[in-house]
Image (cartoon, rainbow, N blue to C red):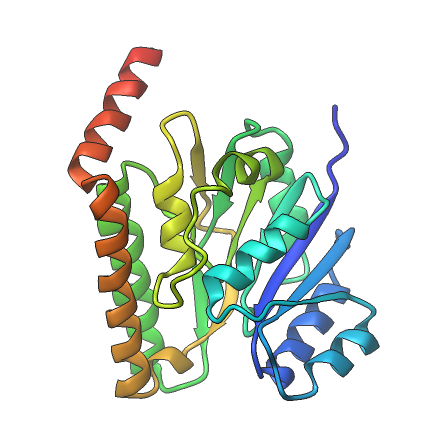
Length: 248
């Protein structure tokens, strides 16, 4: 059986303190990463020094936005498994071990994702993030897609899957949710494993103010417009369900 290698990609911009914690938690993994790539989107803080101190690979991307930043990291990754975290993600010690265990035996064109446990903010904000935001994301978007979407703070994919979709993902629109875009680009023969036990800590700060929450709503609307223009969601779901039936 193939012994996989694992790359971790972390897009970031001016988030040094959060990045430092994330890298420290990656350093304590029961299954160490073979490669960690921090994709720096024109930071003006101490991100470069933090990466140097942690001994991780830092690459720079000038095109604004997470879509371009994350995609550049996936392009640069050498691992047979490419895992993705946000700067404020807090992976448990066995996160990479868990990811590898699932994808080691999965098909070559497969991704795995799981939920987030929100930290920070008050109890109501954390509850809303877990049950309203993520609940709707996995249930409603999952229905439209015909499969679970990947969650940007906590997912991994096989290198073959990225190679198959990399030319089609959006890179030049910073209002697009890159995880939803990746999910939408998956074809019928590609799959996503949703594992509710594959959890990471996720900051509740996107829901801490109306302005940050409003930006997420705007990004969702822009993402839907971009994706639905090329392929209406119900048609996409219908085609995927038909393909599954044909495989039986």
